[in-house]
Image (cartoon, rainbow, N blue to C red; front, side, top):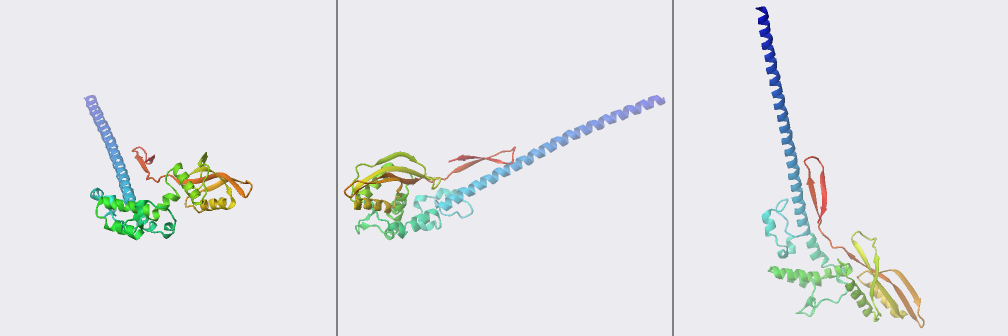
Length: 297
């Protein structure tokens, strides 16, 4: 009888132990699943936060770029709203509405620069005021811009300011693209002003690397001058006075007899790469805290 009671107790204890083990195992599984879900939830929140912050930074940078250049009027808040961008029309904005921007500084301060305006040039026929039969002054150009009431009139006024004000000197001094024909035409005009006609003008055919800047490029033209000393000096003086830079790096000077001087060399001129706004793409990864940056345009 006593043995049967002991066996029954041991059976009950064993069964209780099994229940406890099953309960502990179930609790462990539940705890593991809960920890995994919480960890995944935290990772999702962290990732979404990083994405939202990156989007906000991109929007802020785009807004700053638009505002700094002067494409649109300054936003009412920190960034442009959708309605502000939809209402923005760059061709129909008066410069007084975008003060202290790149566009404002170019169309007002540079366009009225007396040092640039003092550079002589044969202007386009469109730059002649039909009322005075003289070249437009900046005051007259500004009055045309103030009177412009339509998009086409503002576009025409801005074009006149770019081509008929002091701004015209900038692309003449340092063009934004390689144009050997225009370079030879400019050099030929200097020779005509010097009362000397060359036998020929041609690109040198050699590549010239510029060390003055990353976006500064060079091209070379071959030039041979054979004339009396006053004419030769006049040609070289006019080339030196040119708003367009001509750098003679390799030159040979010889006496040709009877007061004749022969100058042969390569004249190097420069041009800039067009300025572009470059975009970059940031890839945000869930697995890593770092971001991968890819170049783009």
